[in-house]
Length: 74
Image 1: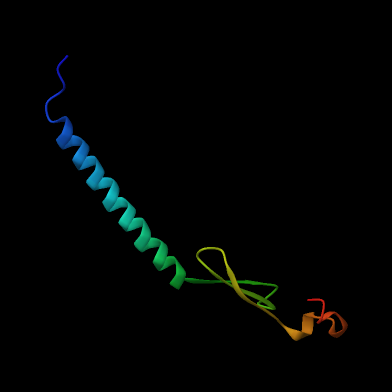
Image 2 (image 1 turned 30 degrees about the horizontal axis):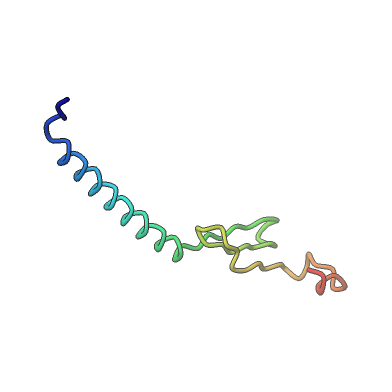
């Protein structure tokens, strides 16, 4: 049974491509840490700050929409 010509070379190329893709994915993941997405609702009475990895970094509420007795619960 004969192997096909260039089999090892093709495997090496495939491994190099996989390594390169993994490095690019790691660089992209690092970039996502620096992105900030800001979402607003109710005419900007509610503002949410989140990074691209879906981690909420902050929430702002306009005092006019909050019941002063509920601030502690919020």
